Image (cartoon, rainbow over all chains, first blue to last red; front, side, top):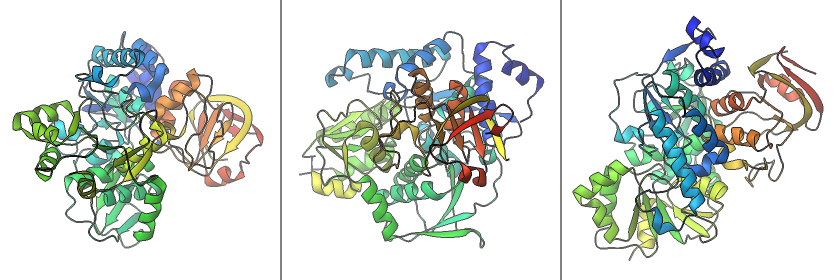
Length: 385
Length: 127
């Protein structure tokens, strides 16, 4: 990869430790993706905010970094471990809360916007078409590349952070005008719901390279699209999908009932949950509205945790959706999400019912609880009175 | 030999090889280096102090922090050899100073599980 004189000097450490570190990361990721140069980016969205995901090593790293480092472009952050407005109700240990506060302070010191959301594309206005950004959160990277008309690599926590600190990123394939992918997945499931799309995404992520075409999908609503992005980001390295018939000479693979069953069997480990979780990715305003309308006159028979960004919760309160959801037994949580939250602990939870494939994977592998997968319509049918 | 250096360094050790990609955030315990995903063929194995040979990383962007944590906890692999680039593995190794290279399919196939090798990710050789 070609570096400018200034970039070369920064890599050698002539502009301080922070930039040396940032350029070391950018060069490694640039080499890994065969990028020929670095280019400017307008917005970085970083992951690595939840203490459960980055641990003590991450806390110390960010604390040291933030002594000097400042972001150069608009920088937003992923969810953390809990909702700071009501954490006292959850009996988390003090150490977790303190370490999480340390992380929050480090990002704030560096100048990041404390959005604590995995759906930045729903709470911030998107810049104009083809703007280069650096999004680490996988569902967000796939979403803005595929339907948000922006361009990003499927960044890592560190590569997005390096972009935030330098305003640059490697000019890798996903940032360029793309050749059509050489793989087309043919969606063969009729009447799909959001869970079906999550499984389709998980399947596609497993077999696709950096991008994939999906045929047989029309009228993809936002809920299903987010579910597809979440599933795809979890299982693979694919960072973009196209919805069309695919090129004539691309390889064709069917997503049929058998493939869907395989994914279901891999992630569904129990027939029922002690609690319900909705919102991985976090829910947007439309989704909260839909849910409040659907739940009218009913209420959940068990605990139902609903995750959404703070700004969305505030809007939902003004519009009355939040109060309706709480009336139906929902527990609304912001700043955090299903994935790796300490609020769901195997010490007091055996199984969780969810419609999220992404949530299912991390609940099972990281939180260590069993997962019961159902589409939202079924959850409401089975679990409300 | 077709070997692309992503993170420089030189090390000697035993190969631990899998044909299944790794989601570092979900599948690896960041303190011990033990694989905890029961669907992975390395379930319960440790990736500490081995030359980890695997196709590529997948999934969460926070996997990069897992790699950095492994290093801080003395549970990291000595080096990583992949066939495809993934930004979490590349950036995690870059920050943790874990030598990392990308090799061709043929080269990958010739690497045997359990074999002792020297990876020279400075001059670009596997001996």
